[in-house]
Length: 149
Image (cartoon, rainbow, N blue to C red; front, side):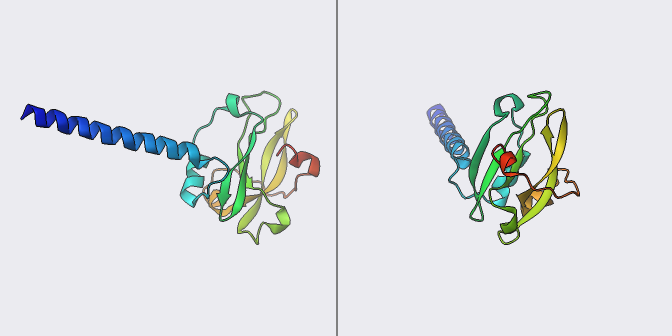
């Protein structure tokens, strides 16, 4: 009887460990820049905490959402990395945003000792989730600013 309990326990532990390893692999591969992200995966990423110190200044494509590349940037200014923010947006021109299913909104982006309102094409799921405090002024980033955003 004890042998059956031990074998059952070992089997359960092995199944749990295998599932954990698979989930860990899947999560690591999820934001590799090539995956198609669902609304839930994009929201999960947007709501997850991030290290301001490690991510400050980084720019990356984390995958696609409805076939549109999703760019994430971590700008900071003045007191870094404390004021690092994360901007999750579609990597397309603003004039193509509506056609792609995105919504043009402006947010405050750190610059110098202050912040500037800049407009981006955000995935609709991000806009509807209240992750960002959007501003009313629409101000497209310049070509120079887009190099960093």
